[in-house]
Length: 117
Length: 113
Image 1 (cartoon, each protein chain N blue to C red):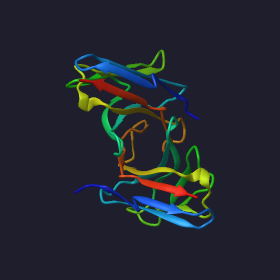
Image 2: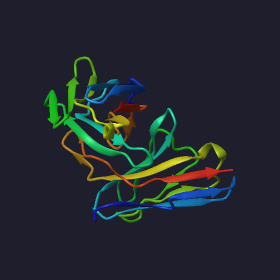
Image 3: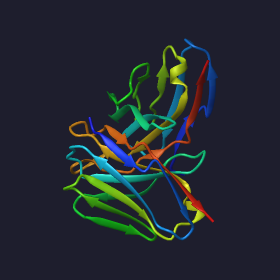
Image 4: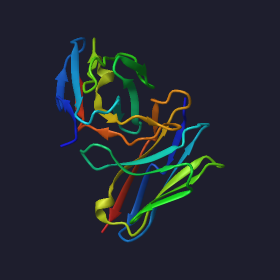
């Protein structure tokens, strides 16, 4: 089954304790990205990756890191989490670009609800 | 970066009525205009998208219309049903940074039986 798998689904941690949220897709998609979802703010892009070893900042990258060493995996790293990073996080993948730029649907994972106390 | 304004933020309709959600965007060369639906507690999923070489696209009870001159695109749902109740998001790719994607703030649609 084609899917994007995120782990864990729920995570409660304390301020300053490094954590990683994993994301893996089995559709051979070139493009992967991370979003956070907060009430009233919609989905905001944190980082994206157009291909292996290529990552770029989205609209809210502060406090986050990513890596893309393999095509299927795109982990989100919080080196020193803070309470303002409490949110619902989504990973997504897409076949990528076509003529005229980004024009493919995103396939989302099931989300990770992170609470930082 | 791309600025996307989505309205209304909440929309309440009676079953069988139509619903319209509008997104206005700033200057962008991208030709891709998607809409996503997110049911409560679930992930967003694409419901319809349109490329700018067409002005309208329809899929059963759902349609998207595009006005590139006025820089807005709209989602139309006809004959609404309770299962249409969800949050709907529009999105726009960014100019220059083809991987950047900006979502609207979302519209909570409630369809009353």
